[in-house]
Length: 195
Image 1 (tube, helix red, strand yellow):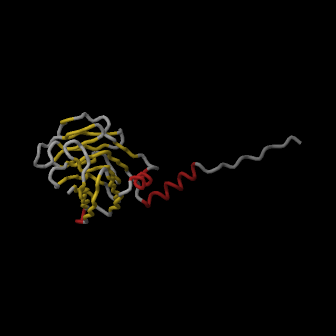
Image 2 (tube, one colour):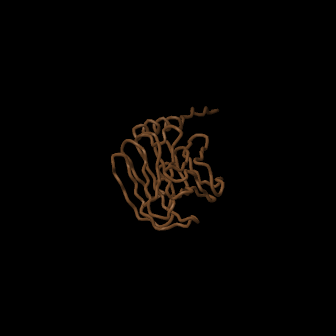
Image 3 (cartoon, helix red, strand yellow):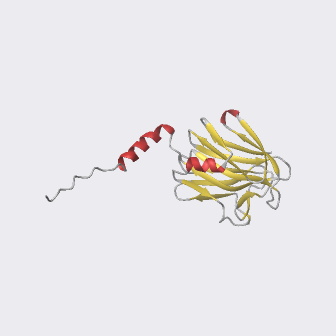
């Protein structure tokens, strides 16, 4: 079973569609990491990623080797006994999304049951085959998500991660009004006539 457990407090909205998630965050600065620059093979216990504004760290945690194992565009664990933790290291991240799957030793996707456990004990379970998207939006900052697999010979694999700091809904109207004032049309003075 592939389990995703976000560490957050407050109401949470879960997204299963990557397009809907991107539509929600596209008007604000967001970070989309595709792991294209990760070295292939055995890696350190953790690896940091940043775009200069948002930052996070992926680490292998659990009773296994606590080492990452990567392929081009993919981050996983060396041991199937370990979980992947995505820890947000920048402030005010209110939305996090990830494309992920359960893979075999060659990063081939396999059937998995993904469980998403939220604060307060709410668990959502999905049967997936292949790379799936799961995103979260919270009214309070999100600090981490944990992805684990209990299904035998499968490893948790991250394909990409999104981070965004979304303003609280009550602040959107004042921001929109301020923007409207800045970009409002100005009255032009009447053109003098030469008659």
